[in-house]
Image (cartoon, rainbow over all chains, first blue to last red; front, top):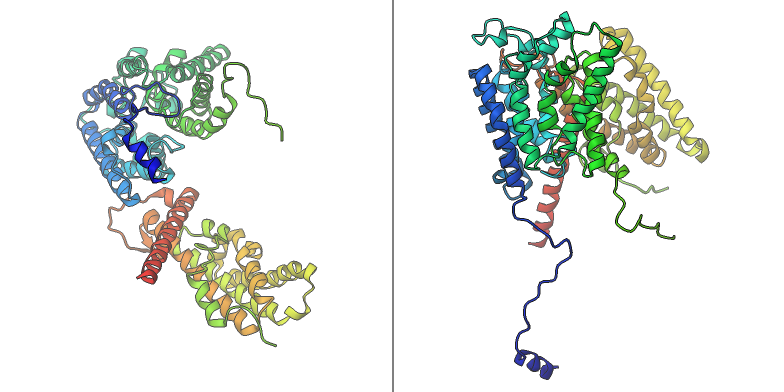
Length: 334
Length: 211
């Protein structure tokens, strides 16, 4: 035994070979940090548009939500005894998206409580980033929307005493739902209408969204599916009711549809993995948005549509497992 | 005849925290979720459950030697139903508004798992004294659990406690806490907290044992 050991020590050391299971392709470019930085860059046009339209309301909401999201992430990871994950930027993205989905008129505690429930109930209780079933920002928004209907509900968007002109009018979708008033397409496209901070300007959503898709941080299939489904359903509605005030273009440019399609539904954690699944997911979100817009009591339905489809993602993933090269894997004989 | 099983004192203490019906056994979820949006309703429910549980446990313990194994659940249910009807009528007679507010949840005590569980686990096997203390301990544990959940929900959701304003005047009511989702969220978070505290206590005990 000892002789053998001696022999081994005398032999020159073998060249070091690393043995690891596949896949062996890897890229240092694709990290959570890079993806989150991309999302933050893509959100810049939306932030600019929000600041231009809503001024101080937007500043307050964005600062409060982002700061509260970072504090919540720090506290909850400390409670779980995990290494701090502030550096990957995911909490900042959650906070910013939540801020952009809230009205600028909402009081500060709405953003703060929303951020804490987004990080806590939406992400950390499931085990942190990558484990969450639902989009954290939308969980936070749903919480404050049900908790404070007076501050986040449809009527809260209107503040007739505001110095910002857009805020003194009803949001385009509320105007449509309650009074049947149409809004001009140019206003919807540029974004000089009332609404949540990030949703007003379709142009800004398109610029940021296309950047995300080109960078492949977001899968293009999901927004394509959402927009296609909305276009088809809105088109059918227009065919049956020629007097409808909102055309297909109105439905696509109005409300939170583009913001939701590009920034909320494309969350890589809570959306399906396979290309076919992403189409199904996107089309489901679009169909639910139209269903909620037309038939529910709420003027807009992007938030609930995304949350409902998030719940179906495990099923979609199971249904759309791609067939590997060489045909399906045979069932093991039991 | 000597009896097996825990002593009356052990039964009483176990019911309060170590075997808390809500936080440890996760029984009786229906009233726990449905009537905890205010302290008044929650405490009325806890009192009604306590009355039914004590009476049912004592009666079941008295007739335990007459029970036929295949008919015991039926007998438990009939016993419980008798006392639930008594409690329901008393509340309807003397606390009419509360009876309206609690609605079907008082009659639903009949199918409350806590009571059937205590009849099965304790009362049908042990003497009257043990069964009575067991029922008292479990009732106290149930009341504590309901009080903890209802306090969180009423203070956050309405800014009050037992209907008395406790939060500052500008308090924005968290409407979600009064609605059903608030019940699930509060129960889940408190259940997690209870497990966490239990784990910490167990860890401290083992480290002390080693040292």
